[in-house]
Image 1 (tube, one colour):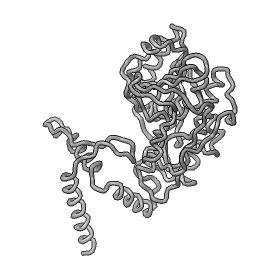
Image 2 (spheres, one colour):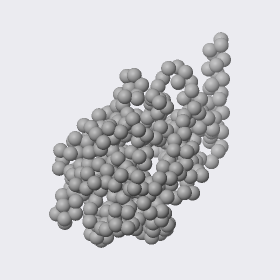
Image 3 (tube, helix red, strand yellow):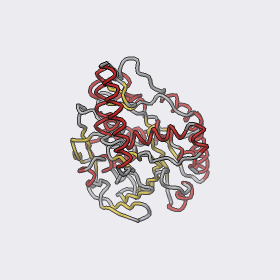
Image 4 (tube, one colour):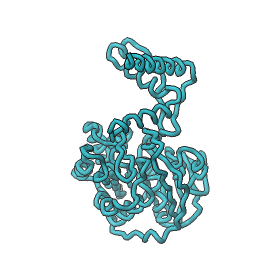
Length: 367
């Protein structure tokens, strides 16, 4: 009888939540999760017979459920109390780390992305422009010793080695990050590496080019905030998660920055207005823009084709070059080779975290 009452209660709560959700205007974006939310799907006979309509409606109801963050917190606490250490695609790891899972990927998509890079590399090589590729391992790979017992993850080294076998000019950061894994090179509540982790990758890139990076002490260090909780936290809303610190490193405090072909501009690579909101990591280069140009104090022109891992990496680069250009292929639809020629680019760096590159359909269209 008691179990029946509990079941009826939860069914009523679920029903009331769905009704309330249908009466409440849909949200299009989650600031805490930094992603677009599912919208009500288009109903068609094909979607119904294939079963995709049911999945789409389920995703819609989950994303638009009222007080969703509170429900996510409750679900997390219940599952942890039951002994689970894998909740919502996040491992609850040692030392307070919330580590995003990466246990599967589409081999077809990854190979298509690498093939596009290989073709672009060959084309730019013929024009005297070197394209290097830095696919950075994420915390689930580098900090595997912190994962819960029996936790599994895809072998990111294997993916890297496949890319290297396709004739790409690869920058290997695996050993570099592994050598510093006892330092704060990844956030505890976010999927990005920290500015310190980005510096070590910057040094590895310089070394691969036969150059020596300046010591970290050459940059001015500033704590931008010490109350950061990022994307992995948002997936579980665990109230006892630690707060991270976001650090800035710069040699010049001011830079002229142009976004999206001059549609907007700034006098700093740090958009500090984000520090008072939920998406604090977006302070680096104003989040993800289609194109960004930073004018620095060095020589030559660098193009970084990137995901958000390049946003904090760029702070170490911008004063090495007269111009640092950044393109996010998810938003920029032109040809990279045309951009290189039109802007007199001297060298290109493709910089992603490895799981994101493996899944990014836009990478397959690079040309």
